[in-house]
Structure formats: structure tokens, C-alpha cells
Length: 78
Ligand SMILES: [Zn+2]
Image 1 (tube, rainbow, N blue to C red):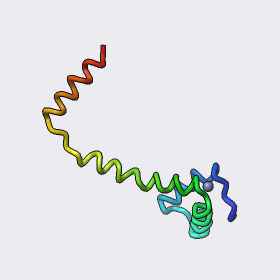
Image 2: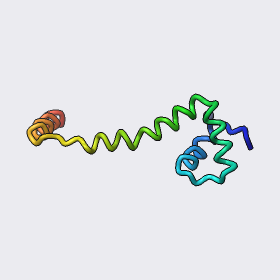
Image 3: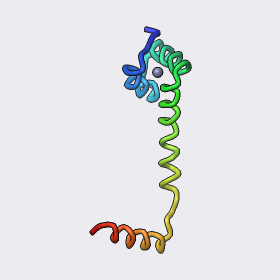
Image 4: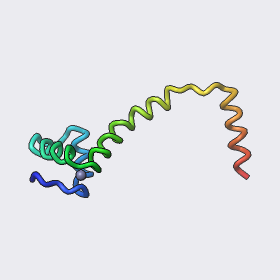
């Protein structure tokens, strides 16, 4: 069970990232991810996502910009 294919790996990766895999599966996943560019990128982007969301939601948009944005968005809807 050391050879994990990427395709079946994606679902496993989610479990791996949630930390709900049994230790032997977890170790096998770690080994695969370390040697697999695609899975490394997947893990990296998954881990980065909450940070992106956090940054996005902590930015406060000034009300005049919000008004301008709403006006702009209205012009797009015809
Ligand atoms: Zn992979």
C-alpha cells in the first residue's frame, strides 16, 4: 500500500490534510506527496487557501469605494 496513484490520491489527500487517516496510510501518503510534484502542489494550494480567504475577509472596503463598486456593477447589468 505504498504506491498511491494520484487519481485515488486526491480523496486520500483530503483525508490526509484533515488528519483523519490511520498512521500507516498517513505515512504512505507523506511518502507519495514528497515524491510527487502534482500532489505537493495540491497540498500547498490547499494549505494556502484559508490564508487567502482570511486575507480577503480582513480587508475592509471603504464605503465610498463600495458605493462606486455597486454603481459600476449596476452598469454591467443591462
Ligand atoms: Zn501524486
